[in-house]
Amino acid sequence: MHARLSLLIVLLSPLLPACKGSSASPELMGSDDLAPLDYQGIQPLHVRDGILLAGQPSAEAFAQASRDGLRTVIDLRREEETPDLDERALVEGLGMTYVQRQVGRPADLTPELFAELRTLLANSKKPLLLHCASSNRVGAVWLVYRATEGGLTIEEATLEAQAVGLSSKALQERALEYVRSEG
Image (cartoon, rainbow, N blue to C red; front, top):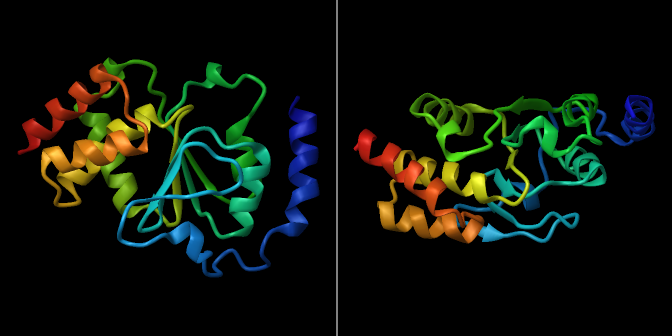
């Protein structure tokens, strides 16, 4: 498996921009409004201010996103969720920064992890992709980020989080507990 992944990276690397510092495509930057994005078959996918919120991208989608200027990938999945994809090797091989914070259940979303993810979203090089398998966990993180960093009310942040994929009441409650504790 790793040999095939390495071959994929080698085959794709000449297609990368010559200068990684080049500007990102406007498509990946989005605007200051949260909007759905149709990009490389990634479902669901929303973008706001250079933050892409998504379900699991394919290797081909990562390669195209790298060419389009994606700089950072934050993965909330557990390693066992995709045993056939070494996402770290793929993403780093394409010249992007990879961060994995494994969230498997609501209890994994500790106050410390929420605080770290808030900092990563605020300070990482953009455009950045925050993803899990379905965008459910992403929605919980987005709720926290928008309520604490984005100036939204809890109700507004919850609606945005649900729009990007938050469907678990347990994850939503975990996020709301954190937001209320920060208030």
